[in-house]
Amino acid sequence: MTGADGSAARLWELPIETGEAPENGATFDAIVVGGGPGGSSAAGYLAMAGKKVLLIEKDVWPRDKVCGDAVGGKSLGHVAALGVKADLEASPHFRVTGIVFSSPKGNRVRVPLPEEAVERLEAGYALPRAQFDALLFDRCQGMVREAGGSILQGGDVRSILFDDGNGGEDPGEGSGDARHASGVVVRIGGRKGEEFTFYTKELVGAAGYRCPVAKSVVESSYNEPMVDRDHYCGGYREYWRNVKDCGTNTGDIEIHFVDSVIPGYFWLFPVSEDVVNVGIGMVMSLMDKQKKKLKALQADVIANHPKFKDRFVDAEMIPGSAKGWQLPFGSPRKKSSKQPRRSSMNGVRLVGDAASLVDPFSGEGVGNALVTGEIAARHIVEQKTPLDYQDEVWSVLGPELINSYRMQKLSRRSWLLNWFMGKAERKPALQEIMTEMIASKEAQEDLHSPWFMMKTLFF
Ligand SMILES: Cc1cc2nc3c(=O)[nH]c(=O)nc-3n(C[C@H](O)[C@H](O)[C@H](O)COP(=O)(O)OP(=O)(O)OC[C@H]3O[C@@H](n4cnc5c(N)ncnc54)[C@H](O)[C@@H]3O)c2cc1C
Image (cartoon, rainbow, N blue to C red; front, side, top):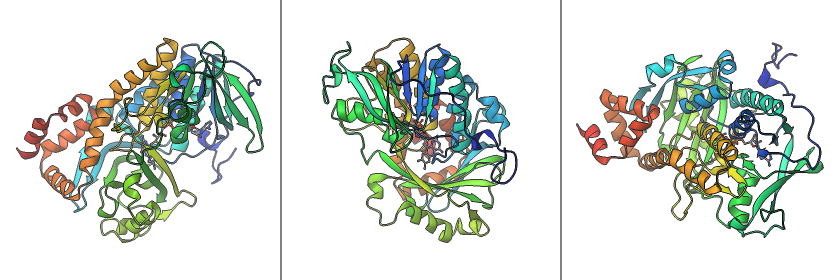
């Protein structure tokens, strides 16, 4: 088979063969809804533990996913554990060695990623999600089928079935603790397709920010709000060729705080083969106050901003690559007893974007999707309670999400960004701290201390 340009097609450009659909009415040890990083990892880890899994994905491969395409160091342990690292290494990718930040005034700081991590190939990558997700899904679907499970591509989960936990009637909407998930209804074959029902006592919701499983947990079962525009972000991305001063296979990714985009940022993430992911993101409640849409804001930065317009003089956008999507942040909510949002109930665990776990400062969500995919699978195997899951997710991810939220709020002030980056530009010690902050959990803990920050900033 050949690709669009006549060369041999690669795995992520081809359909993925996933075998026969299971029989209507079949029962599984676990059903995973969504085949992105969160769902693939949950299904992969469950299959590794010998569980019979049904993995349902609405799309059909090859498929795109709107993203900045940066895959941080946090993801790579899971990429390796799930057996995808060698394939990823062998496919075209951009190896990230540092992050360049710039302030609205133009102060520029380069934060190198730790050398040892770069040498061990564990610092981070940037590569199109179409490619990353296909490698991960292909590997995990293989493990699921080997363990006796099934895969459904083109399966749109329409509703969740509940009972009272003993096979009796569903106690109904709003009855939260009294209901237990018992299965899903899936439509196969598009709008006019056929509906199938599959049964399980263990459901994983991994279908992104509009996950039907998440809606039935948060909204229908507990009458809690799913979307909070103070904690959701709008994101927009385009792929460009020939952007000046971007590395080809290795180098830096760039995050720029630009006046017209604050509170949010403009990014340039090379993803190999001379292609750069160019995008922009902004908190939705703040975006509501803006006159311009993200697409227009980005077009303006590219065409007119003095720091960027020359870099785009000979560049061209890849047709069809302009797309927007939403990022549900993991920042703590004021009025919620379950942080950042309810992520479990009897027979259900939500992972990744379905649990609203995107980092509120960097916009990274792939790592947290993989991390929670593993936690969900382990909790199913060990038969832990829904509350155990909620607690472990927040104790593992909460400290860094709280910290990132603080940084996001600080970054809404242009003067502070100018001041901080002006300092960091001149102070190698501050650059080292930024490296640590990105790479090490312990250093992130230090940032909780105001004295530590004061000492570093002023002396
Ligand atoms: C513009 C933008 C830039 C971003 N940049 C970065 C970045 O650089 N690095 C980073 O780490 N993160 C980034 N993120 C966040 C990242 O994309 C997500 O956090 C990540 O994809 C979450 O993975 P997931 O598996 O939870 O959900 P998803 O990747 O959204 O996967 C969900 C899957 O569920 C499927 N699905 C949906 N509905 C149904 C249904 N009804 N039935 C069955 N299947 C269904 C979807 O087709 C999809 O395949 C960005 C996001 C955006 C929007």
